[in-house]
Length: 157
Image (cartoon, rainbow, N blue to C red; front, side, top):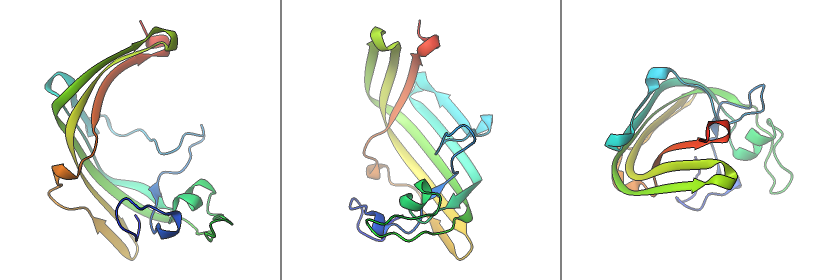
């Protein structure tokens, strides 16, 4: 979250950065979710990801997230200790606008991709702060959404 106008993101204007931190395998910004949190009907051009009350940290800004709370000397961003928080989100993709088939044998990659419409409802809660996105979400606020079915690496056949 930023204090400046939408589209002018600046590290010095960031006031919240919610994430799950780096795991023991050095993977960041990704976590497993319950199996029933995801529903996909690729042939019907729709999918949904619904997560409620996910435990995360608010590192205040990307600089503190990536430096584990040490901040940055330039631009000057002071170190901030992370705060425990909970986030919830409901992402819905619906309706094929365009389709692309991609195959790259040399990279062992192929897939079918649908450009779709999408909406996101999102909220965060922590001591002294709560945020809720516009409800219902505005589909016109979406810039790009893609559903994909792909194969790569050892699964490429």
